[in-house]
Length: 355
Image (cartoon, rainbow, N blue to C red; front, side, top):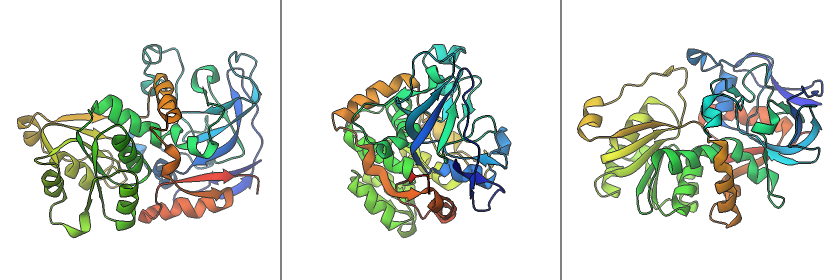
């Protein structure tokens, strides 16, 4: 089968012929119908995250936002059959630890990130295996499009968890989103659809225009104002109620916190680059005196998919609106490399794998 392989960090992925996977007893094999191209893939391609012990090895097949069809079933799998349509969260849990049993599989004690470790080849390929498939595979409604569901493996569901669970925002809240990549645009769409007032913050006017199309009521172009945080505060009438760093660099994190009003909530979604290496200076005194809450947000608990599917069925949420372009597997390497300069708008999705 064909797959895009990371041969050397920072060098273009190579599309190669590799062996079709065989399922272990607890696994299924999923034939990939669509897979989003995420900034986390860019991080893995760059060789980031050694500071947290998850540096992607060379020889890895990346890809962690899949939707597809089960093509083979391991002998111990009980709830899945060939032909089932599924999505798979990027954080593959074991289903047995205390966090998994309590419905927080995104915090699994032995989490394996899909597409970032050698024991879990990713979905930039015609097919890929899924560990503990009974636990980790989420069956898709029959009438949804695979490409639209690709973001439910990472960015769209991450944005939903960040807002609905970690921020616990309310209709009418001002929600600032710093960074309008795929997860940022997803957050803007979700916040708007659920009754908040989103403010989009970015350095590129084309991304801010897309944010307006998705429901941003105000936008801030960082290159055109002296102090982006103060601009957000003025637009929100004294400060945002919720602010999200959807990028993960020092500037966006610090601006996010500074844009909040008293008792506001910052949610950290973006993971850092090799420049920060997981460390960002924070205005602790300001956060203390204003009683600012700081929350990390990682993926989404599996138990939340049902609610997400209900909102999609009602047309309240439309993840397809976040798709920026569809690609072939051969176009993937250049698209991933273009994220060096933040050139992609929305979520690029690979939909053709066979060549």
